[in-house]
Length: 171
Image 1 (cartoon, helix red, strand yellow):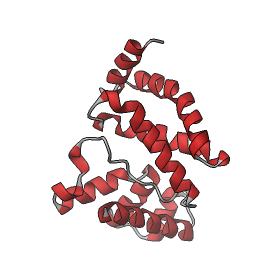
Image 2 (cartoon, helix red, strand yellow):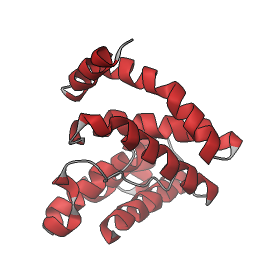
Image 3 (cartoon, helix red, strand yellow):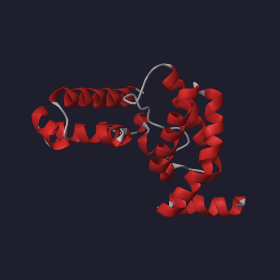
Image 4 (cartoon, one colour):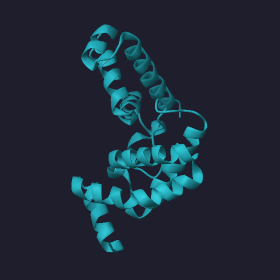
């Protein structure tokens, strides 16, 4: 497929076209995989690619310049590889803020906006448990029942979600 078709799909994906997003991410996957193999431990390459594709699908609408899409994805993969090398597995997701709109710049917004951006940057399972506990006020037992988790698993997930939100706010 030529670059004009890719650019058209990229713009459509940014505008919310789900099939276009799937085509863009599908075409990017092989290049990301090759890049990850050079920057990651062999076993972590696929995890880094998956995280980059997931982040891109969530944050594509915030990308200012579509021409930066490839370099943005590569930076996400490299950051993920570095995170995995440091041993920070799935619970320590770093929000991607470079080359995206200033909507989540902590230094430019008030506390409520910063907190909303921190919560939005969390992976869905952490965002959900944080909102259930701190917004809806459910107990750990109620959360465990709703999410089919043990009490200990619910507490651990809530702890990780809060740690990630604090990390985002610290930056």
